[in-house]
Image 1 (spheres, rainbow, N blue to C red):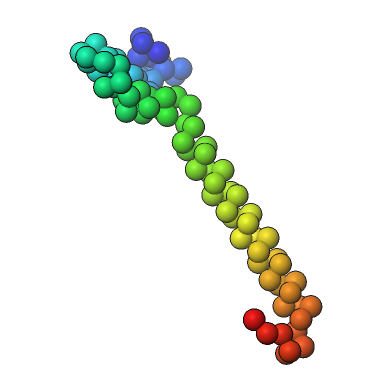
Image 2 (cartoon, rainbow, N blue to C red; image 1 turned 90 degrees about the vertical axis):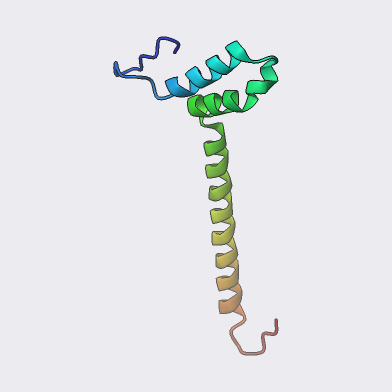
Length: 85
């Protein structure tokens, strides 16, 4: 990674994040001063936040589908007009 060369021979996708983090670490008083840059670099490498967000969206979508199916089932079973909310 530190070479800057990616798999295709061009600059690696996370190289700029690495350089920002590396530069910060070489000039900071404490490593925690560079925590946000480290987080950005790791997100570029692993996409953990992106995957977590996608999972949340998928779970919510599935919840809405189940809720709509339950409602449709209730509507078809109780469609005699005496159904009160």
